[in-house]
Image (cartoon, rainbow, N blue to C red; front, side, top):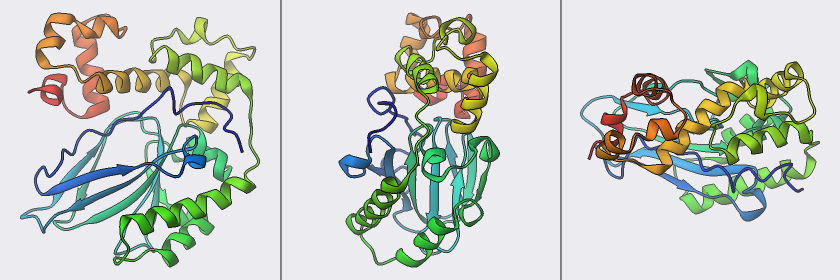
Amino acid sequence: MKAPADIRSLYMPVQPTVRTKTEGVTYTEWPPCKPLQPFIYCYWELKTLQPLANPFTYRVVTDGCMDIFFERSRPQESYVMGFCKKYTEFLLDPSFHYLGVRFLPTMFPQFFNINAKELSNRFEHLASVTPETAGFVATHFSAGLDMQQVKDLFDDYFLKLLAAVEWNTDNRLYEAIQIILKNQGMVNVEKDLDTGISPRQLRRLFEFYIGDTAKTFSKVVRFQHILRAKPSTQSLRENKIFFDAGYYDQAHFIKEFKALYGVTPARAFGR
């Protein structure tokens, strides 16, 4: 099945808050098999290298995606994380090993025919959203699997699901999404997203397939564009990147960035 839009080539969501071996914790991403790449951005692993002295606070920055995740020692307890319009923090045990699947925007609702808005800004037991997938996770994953085996299990399962998906390929929604992505989120929603659909209908489609409005999604895309650019603290001061990204002043930029990331730009990019 061909994806309704080539989102992957336009959007590469960043989760930057765990650096390699920082504090004894690693975060790693793997791409799915090629036929799944237009739909699933990555499979990911977050784990401790050895037990920590204290519980670990893991911060997830806003990325516009939806994720399935579970602790591999407890696969019977799997979850889905909806679209979030601000950062989220999880307090984890001193020893943990999480696995996850990150879907590109709109793709989780397409795969499972669920309303993304019902999951926005929270996480929910996967069994209450898609019992079949929760059952697959519970019965196929164990602590003894290596990441290649994990990847193969995910690939096989989602390829079978993909073959059965009944897609809503409303071009008006995906044209609007592509306009937002091509412009790195710097759009006037009222003027720039004229794709032959009323603002009310467009809002309904965005809420169902993204989880929030086109305006909120644009903010997230703009924020992610800044993360991918990896500006230094000096370049933030000297080059005024916030003006280039469409913020009208530095205070507005810092306030919005902190709401989406959890810390100020100076702390996020300080080096």
